[in-house]
Image (tube, rainbow, N blue to C red; front, side):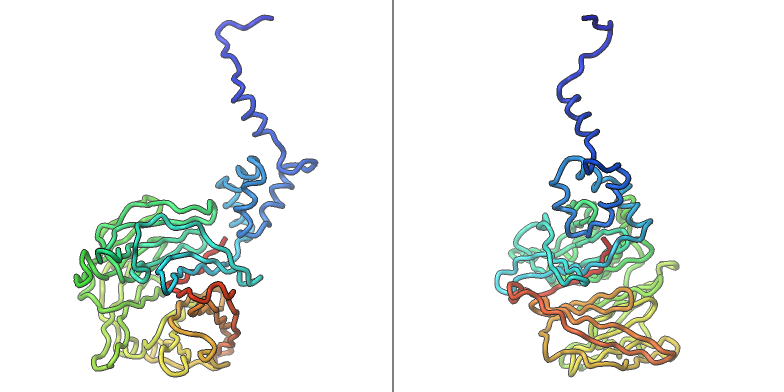
Length: 371
């Protein structure tokens, strides 16, 4: 046997790896057709698919696979719910497929323990399949956190990103122009109210300070409409003082006072559909109203009554594609489909009951993410 001078011997590991790389995705089918089949596989089953074979795992995790799903518009919206057990405070991310009504659980977040679940803020880049969990508070020391946790649907994994510049909890977060804003909250101590604001660039994995709020707020609800983020503390018992609110303009990097009509009519949790801001009132029969910018007023929408007798507070709300999703205690979901005819706007509701195993779970946040 002749060995060429200077040639390296072929290692068994390399030979096995080449054999794996040449393994067909589905025996008997060209890889192009097999890849097309995998592209139509629903997101919840990607984790199972990865364990079928190494070739399937490589195909599913390849960045081109995600790009192809986006190009072919195969990604569908899923409801991601950040929930905690009301007795143990154990945290968990559950995901609902609104088409089948099936739930599945995400891998555990790699965060410190114990924590106070409502102290976190959540944001997302829906079309990029990215979920962000910011800050939080340790429940044993009541100290705020700087951490940023990222989940990606393409890998079904959590990772640690660059920490925030300021430790904060009980604050607002939102997405403008593909970047994440962290607004106000409590600082190093639970009584330390802060007004600083910072912006995260996911592509560079960096944080940068932006214009500060004029004053810190007692509690937060926030909504992003266009290039502006609206932040309000809302009405609080005993309703003696008019709520404060601010508006951040990302193009100008400035804050201004929220208009009187907007802040005084903001009486519940908000959700944005397109360029329209809705609020589900936290009092009475939880009627839905819509903000009218031209007149700085709120207008109640028509349609069926919100099923407040059938669900329990607290609520977490999100929306996409003309539909509002209100997640209640026990993770029951009220689904409101918004219709429009001229100036008339209405919402028709239906209730999706969660499994009985979720009875003791309380929602803290919900995000719509495409996967």
